[in-house]
Image (cartoon, rainbow, N blue to C red; front, side, top):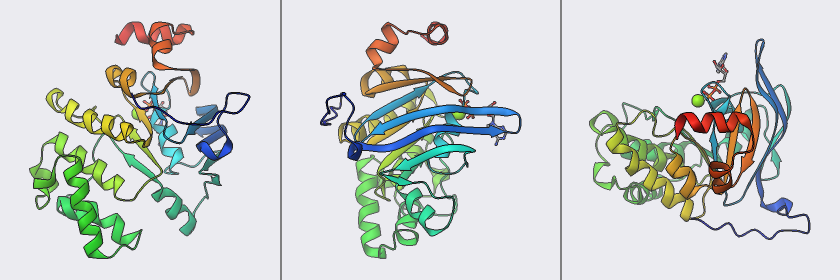
Length: 259
Ligand code: ADP
Ligand code: MG
């Protein structure tokens, strides 16, 4: 399990500089639906936070607000000390600090694997082509798909495509990586090859927010489990504490259905 080395102050919370993503009293509605309710959540540098909860509880919306794919109605979100801007060039830059991996891969179908991993670097980071290619190849090797570089996404298995999606996100040198059910669309035999890449990333110290139903991953990789229901954070705890001794009835009920 990855160790988080944060210097704790007297109150036991890490100093402000170690707080990478801070959501403060965030609220969001979809029409009459109060999808995020008074969300307070701090993610520290190097921390792996696994978000679990029933379908419809707001997990995806939470992820999408963190890189501003969704606006919020009230409250604030800061990333590395900077408030998330509403639009413009600042937003593009800040969004590039937040890597996102979706359930459905979302690779560009008409670009090769290599081009998929180069594109953000050349367009957003303004990296020159040779450097972008070198970095893309190194990242594709790192996630175990280096030999697939010249193929198109459709020629790859789901597990390979998802690893390309992870490489593409990493190519932007994000400060934090968000994973929204990255293995939910995969055939069972491909789940572990993606989880293994995520485990390694966690061990390498990447700050990660992971929405997943893979409780084995949560137990072994998470520093903290956040349990959501009905748009609220009901419970936050270390994985052992959460899985062995959930405090709330909602969490007990949820765990009894999935474990
Ligand atoms: P989860 O990821 O936990 O399953 P979501 O964040 O996807 O939950 O959705 C939370 C609730 O918000 C659900 O009731 C869903 O139907 C609703 N919802 C999500 N996206 C939208 C949208 N764009 N417009 C309206 N309702 C939405
Ligand atoms: Mg979801």
